[in-house]
Length: 321
Image 1 (tube, rainbow, N blue to C red):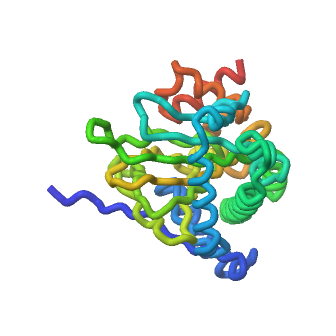
Image 2: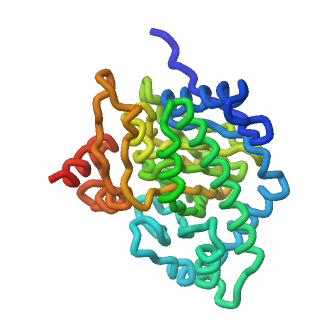
């Protein structure tokens, strides 16, 4: 019997200064990203627009947020599923998070900030907005390269940019006590288009490999300029099944609190597969569907245990009946 395969996520340098459309470096990097999304559904992006100093600032800001009283944090409510405060859940007691809707806008960040700090907190607002805008730049550059390598018409990128909205989730995983499980968060796929995660130096994220189902630790995020870029279910549907939406979970094996910041992209409208990605060898897998509607559908208790492919197909069938 052979040894299990050792899985490591691809590490890809995303440097806007060196990546110009049509150049050799652009095409090479685009191909690396495509292959990573198809094989693992994610990769490690090295994005040096986030410096060590800014990394420290954003994580200090995150800790400050979680130091607030619980009743204050629970004011973070939303009529969108999974957009508000999540925590105090018995089967994942280590986990707590808050959501900032439209974090790349001054209005979105200020609305959240005034809820947490009625007298204002300019440093928090400025830091979160600046961070979110950097993540938008990274995400949109990655998608331009994927759209380009797939030969997809520019109109689809234009449509994406017009309808995309963002959610930033700030997350805390405390260390387990002696009588507690080390489950930080249960295995799941992301329901968005693309998510970008940043963390402190405490590992815990595990991915499930597409080819053999092995779980492996993502231990390549120690650099302040490292981010994990992950495809969500909507991206998988858009690509007609080419892109993989991976299962992942958090296991807390250390004695130190883990802080992460994840930015998710959602379409305020329909997810639709480009005609360039449909042919005789790749028949259409998913009819166009409302993205936020899919999020609401999956959030129903009876649907939460469905595999992502099953949930997508079931929701698409509802949309066409």
